[in-house]
Image (cartoon, rainbow, N blue to C red; front, top):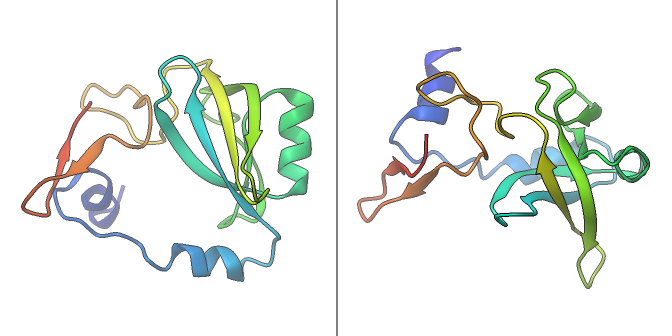
Length: 140
């Protein structure tokens, strides 16, 4: 992993990517955001983007599926890591422009990063912003 990625994923400095939504819009796909939430703990695990193909696959196969805006392909969460998110329920908001996937973890975690012992983190929201504007880990 490059130093830049390590600092982004593990470092204490806040470096929010305010260009993400514009890059999503530029990918050429009709997408909506989809949040994966642990059905037992209600912890938000990850957020991704879904097109019709991803949603159709997710509903048919009962596994959280997104559209990778960087690779421009179907992203079946867990297909490479084994850490699938089994889809229990799919909810849609009032304006029908975002989804919540209520999921059960089949593997060890949902995040592509790993904690200090090398285990996948349960979810991607493992840090908080403290009063000084720095990031501090709240888990793993």
